Length: 514
Image 1 (spheres, rainbow, N blue to C red):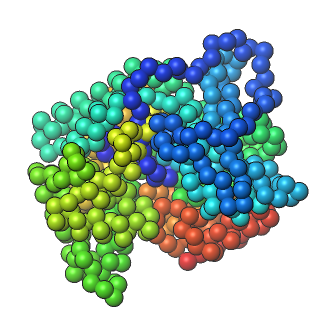
Image 2: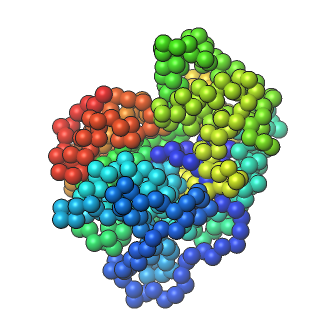
Image 3: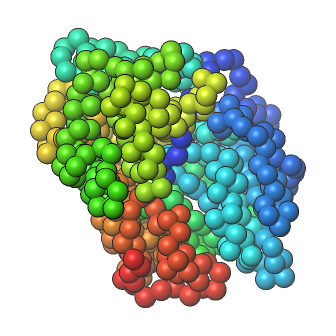
């Protein structure tokens, strides 16, 4: 939606598909006698990513010539009717380097919700080379995502207009336009994906995970969940506690919060990240090019966003950088400390009237490629969130809550508050206020929280540990910046996670890495 998607998992580029006539992928063959748990996967060289996955080239081999292979797993369209129609779930893998000491498959979910694991795993494959010594690395496009029966909504041209629209309405006219755009988006999703929309809940994906475990030949699920992937992992542990093997949750979603509480916590989290970004800039030996003090940095950003609300600047021709696009770009850059230098560059240019870098960051957040095509991460993100979340908010309710959100962040509060309207007109009812992740009887799960995480604030790790239940969650703290801990390349975090996944060495609860 025009506001940043409510990320309950890792923040990756977002995307959406053209409104074109595609086969649903659902099979209407009689599958009543087929046991999907014993299906054989046909692994082949991976094709180039589809538009829904974000496009680009086929994945390159890893340095030791490890080859990426893809396959399609059949799963029930409706898990309440497991002998009915089936859909295809796209998988990717690279085999373990040491087959003699192979533990099994390690399945990754990178979050979103809506991120394509088939494109993300090879993009970051070298970061997990140590884990590949004893695991086949596996990921997948969850149902509704990428090649796995993608949810289709508005076309690329409509999405361009949507992401330029004012997402923080200041008057009745802008509010009406905002509400109309949300309704039109929801109607487009229903028109083009009505068969899939009732079947993309996290509980459906968790059941797909257990089928995947069996099809891959593993007695237990070995799992690495990041951001929303921690929520998926928690729901899996609740449904199948006896099937948990070695599991790691990183960048942890707070399972106790409803959508409003989650968005409010993210407003606080992104404000903290901005505070840290500003302090970092002015602390360096060379002069900070975007402000003399940390407060000056933040004041100038606030003025930029206010000015853009009335007068956009040139972005990437022919599009202009609006307040909405600039906000999305800044939020995207705050996900990782590695992006702070790029954010500084983008702000310097924006103050000179050139919004191209901030627009590139916004495009990355929204899943837009340079050729103007969108992946389907935004439709997938919205459809999964709205199918999971029961609350439906009104514009009047959001307006009453604006002071609370602005107190959390004067820069991001409005945007994250208005994002609560995303599901208002969704055609499928939401399931619950928040997920149930209680998992009595599960094997221990390593839960990694980052004190500087903007998207999944640190407190969520402790609440996940408490919600999983006594003797299940084991908390590891990383005192760092950015979304997630393992991908920060912190040696302590990586050695601890690797020691657990590879050798079964669970750290002492409360271990801290800095």
